[in-house]
Length: 460
View 1: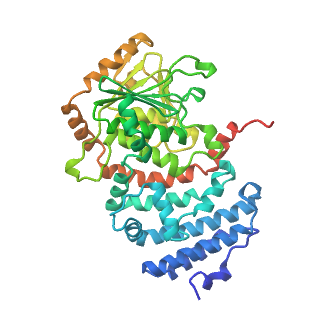
View 2 (view 1 turned 60 degrees about the vertical axis):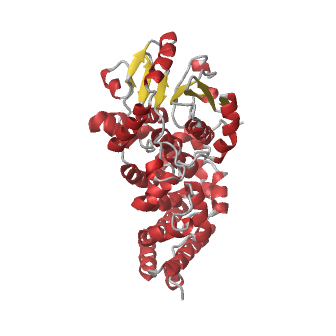
View 3 (view 1 turned 90 degrees about the vertical axis):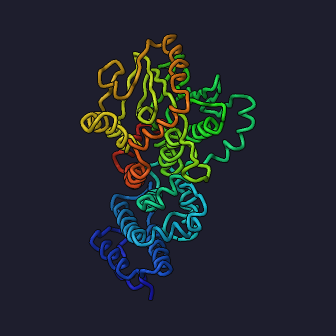
């Protein structure tokens, strides 16, 4: 009899969850699970199959009663506990198998897909991911949490985690396809981001005019492509990131840096843990700070290019996170910054890591936990912004002057050494290991779902 089959009598009643019974199932399976990878692989598949049978007895998530939701939550918790214990023992072996002993470079999405195929039940398969993808956030089963458990376990291991971080620094296929055309034209319109090279400076203009540059998966994809192109271009020495002019009625004709995560997209189910939240941190923001990885040895890595952030109007949420990673920040005198993570209910990317370093523990708590808004003319804003100019012509004229000060090989080399002192790769890896799990839980929490529910489209 299999490890799971031996415990069939302890299965949860689908009408009413019994957490104690669920814990007994979890503990029994964990004790019965063999230590060898092959046997453990079978147990994981059996645990997932058992949980799937229980969930299939229930209505779809949107139609479940409170007791049925409790039953589903207990089933997920039991299965995730077994997955967590499996990964404590076997994460390194799993990663080695999926990457050919780290000979293959897989990004987070590719790694999850490979794990679903090679280790059924460890992470959701394509059908489960597609089904959740089509649902609003409140109606999803929440399979992304299992991806968070898996990726967090990989990132917790120093060698595997650093290998995964490096793999995420590879240029995207889209950027490689566009590179020749971009270099010839000196510009590329990527949809939500416009890239233009002028006098050795790559200008990345965020242009989601309708939503005040609120980030979604489309903009993350466009930003990563633009960053790749700028880093691959040998004629670019410095990168400038700035918001474009808006068509939104409230800010019509004004430049806006960023209003953070697109909460409408989050409500609609369009903000994914892998394709947005992790890809953003490990993709284009990491590339802006650390540069690209081309497969060469550590002694050959260029370490990125200096970059300047220009803030018009405001930098909220994810926009503020970008400022914490920039080499130099200039802003209009009427601008403000905020990082309202606690109000939104989510973890602000690597903001907790970087804001504590920039402003200290007390200010970090005021901004992140209490939602403090800081105007750039306040003294504390000097911890975020280097120079303040009058909005309009004065700020426009400051951009090329400030970008010019970031030119030079010594600047590039020293920014790399500053980053090594401030945020060594292993510290970033350890932070992301916890972030992967905590953020996965937060985006399915009741308070977040309730808050983003106000962005639901009104009935026709």
